[in-house]
Length: 200
Image 1 (tube, rainbow, N blue to C red):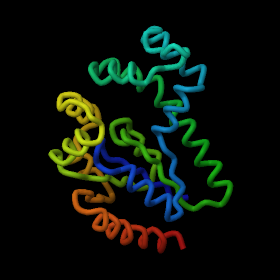
Image 2: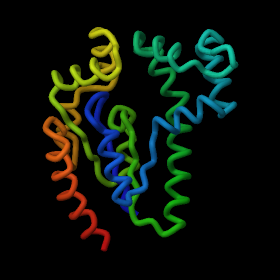
Image 3: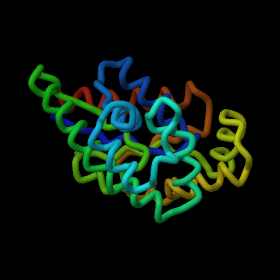
Image 4: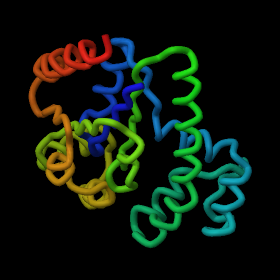
């Protein structure tokens, strides 16, 4: 099975690329959705987080309030690293289990959609690293428009993920998403043809 690691940064358009791949028949394992599921319903992860950060991260329903947790980790690098030490091993376990289930159905390809693929060293679990890239100024502009955050909040979130220019240097494939949707799709069609030929 060919495993592609898809990454980028906030505002880069990684989710749009993941949707395109999924629409064209590539099963996409979404790390963010896996984290949300763990925060919602994984009792072992929940208890470790409360032990580490206190019950102040919980909402009235007793579940993790992601906005409270986000405020904490985006303003404190040490807190972010402590969170990652708890969550990342479970994310890897879940995604590997999903990948195995796909392989058992005969799937030849899967995509690991992971925002922190390179920062968290997840690239060792994939065969190719694909980076969705945009220039920093455009990245900031897109997030400001989309998420209604302040400039300092946007910059903190971008800083927490590492530079797209640095990720680009480590990529096997770079998808330049700074142009139109059509231009991005043209790049994806060329890449997809190579993958299709490789698998068939």
